[in-house]
Image 1 (cartoon, helix red, strand yellow):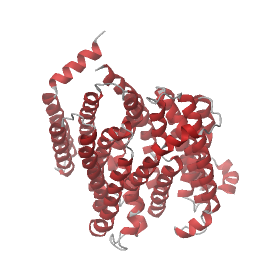
Image 2 (cartoon, one colour; image 1 turned 60 degrees about the vertical axis):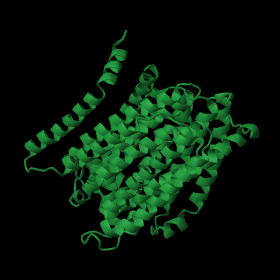
Image 3 (cartoon, helix red, strand yellow; image 1 turned 30 degrees about the vertical axis):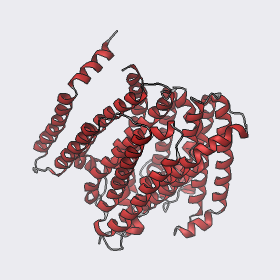
Image 4 (cartoon, one colour; image 1 turned 90 degrees about the horizontal axis):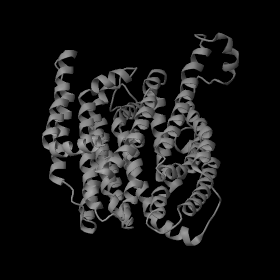
Length: 505
């Protein structure tokens, strides 16, 4: 129970910072939908899908590799960090420079002619992200979760601040609504035709400002390349690179590929790129589940590696999985039954609500991704990372096949099913292969029951609409209480034991 408390405490810090940070970042949704046309949101969706994909190549699995070689390998974590960070810096700077030089060609290829600067800024963002990846990983490994969380929050505050400055404040100054004395100055640099341009610029400036602070707090870095250390690390990381590429295909290609798979005129009032903007905006409503998964991953990955020598770790991993599923299914129910209210609050323009029915599918998809992170520990601590590539490659294929076959038929729902279907296949493969090589006594039947019941209650609550806001609120609250009561009845002994452990002096 003590180890679970430690993991829960670390996850809580990461979670609180993620929830607070993403909640602040989430406020950009009404800003974007209120100030930017749907076509610009479509461009935003596509460009950030590209950045997410390339980010995997820029870091090539070195975060997980750093955790593995800093624990249980008999190596000095400081030496491992120096070498890993040096290699990431070489790769990141080389790839970033290449992308920067070919920015004009990329702008033509992706139909953004005259906007080469977007791809130049993307190259700079990717390079800085790569340079920050291992210092952030070092903070996680050393248990400095509070420092990690505060830095992430500062980065988000800066990003949001620049977004508001460029998209809202500068716009109203130029229009003469506010601060008219600044109009001559702002008018010299403000471009009313820029939309996604300012989003990328805000991201770039926020990263540039946070980089030196992170390097200072994470500790000294000395350039060092030792073949005896890097060769086995590269062998461990290479399958993780391909796993990451396949995984990001699952996670973001559904957004980036959506506008190209959707037939023109499928939604009569929207172009395919505008529909991609609607799809991407609704994708953000699944952010609550996504950030919980991310917070758990931040805490769990170094925790799992540190516990890899513990002879009781299979039982520990099973308990972590069980309570992870309980918490996330409860969150899924709470979010889904109130989804229409959440959508009404954050979409500041018409035309976004028709895509809401896809969000429960995305919430379940992200939950399955979290389960996959739990399951994947077996190939990470047994150094059989090649299986990660096989599993995520199958998931990527499922993603692309579903997008190309179901998006032309079902539109938004088809895009969401690509996420759900991909992660479901990955979970099944990882579970069955893992139980063969590294058996873990998961409470499989009970966990599947929670998943099915929660998903059915979620959709029932989402579809339930009496026409009265008060009655809807009472019924939706009743569904949440019903599921909470079910958890209490099924986990009464465990909850009682946990309560006694946290109140024990």
